[in-house]
Length: 550
Image (cartoon, rainbow, N blue to C red):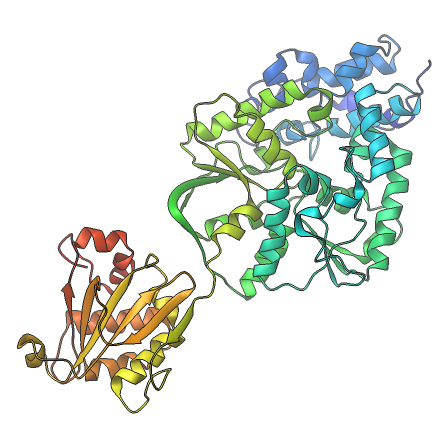
């Protein structure tokens, strides 16, 4: 069958622009005129080794294809679909501003091949499933939102969460993470009952006619839902909406945001606290569709850097120079072994940096990077940014006061102190569940030293949801705080946890009989108390100076 290279010929000018320098092929741009050094920018050539798989080699092959020197056969089809279209080659190319667009040439070739009937059998099955089932995986359309029982599906919404096929059917933890994140942030939103595929795969495979028809269906569904902002956790969907829908009538009526952009903007206006239970070194893998293709680099990093008890580590190849995971451009379906080997290379970069959690913002990346760990001895965890944020968001703590006159008798210093702590339970946010401490109040420090009974006493128990404040002393408290009435009266006027800690430390470090004082009686070893979380507050208060103090 004769192939008409209608789409490829539109980009033929790139062939003559290429100077065959090889910056896209081997060691990146090491010359003094280069943008920067990038080690081995082409992920496919790094695995397969042959020059024909680099951008320079592909341009040379395409020249011979257009010149009639190479015929289209099975080997040529496999070669055409071996490019992940990651666009790393564009970043190292100095031939023109922005680099030669080899990925666009490969997609144009694929479009011409499909138009002429030269298709891969594996891809035909995928395309048929998208048309028939609304997803590439052969899954029933009706089960798309099973993991959330369809509770967010509605007819009208300003903000529409578009999960995408891979998140819904293959990475449900990621999809659930996106849902949980927006729920916890208090965002009113909805999802489509019949969401269907965004069409990214149709575009990457070269099925232009099917893509146009699918895009029309999606845009009409957005309009029917009354949506204004479309939020998606899938980098592939995001890239498709932002760039490939540009020519679709009506698409410009919507604002498209990746969930990391949406959440980052929201958290700037309404900050929330995120914290890992155990310290970890985390790093971010830039999805090609989100980074190089759509220019989103900082929002995911801002979110991850805001997680407490974590050390953020940049991989050597990051942002626009990030190495591809190997899953894009249809490679995962046409050549899964190649995709896995590329992912292994990327995983090893994180392992070399002693990273504990490698985070991405794309279901294809998450799945393939995890596949790349198969057989590896590393304990590297691969997660999506929505999963990590949803599981590390610190829920607003609750404070309850038990006993008569709850929430505290305002006529006494102890009652006012109990009521104050109930309003500011985050003061105890660093303590582990089950921690309990006694608060005793004295008129004079001599009474404490003489072991007289305090004028008031209560205890605070750290629970799963916050704190319980109860009159009297606990049966087995971790420690006892002894405070002067004057200190209590000053502490209950502090408007924030930080100012409370500062004033608390002042009373401990600079005790004064008239102005106020605080003292401790420890019932457990200092190191044990620090592990229980008491050390965090002591640090903030400036009273944790060495191993002998808490």
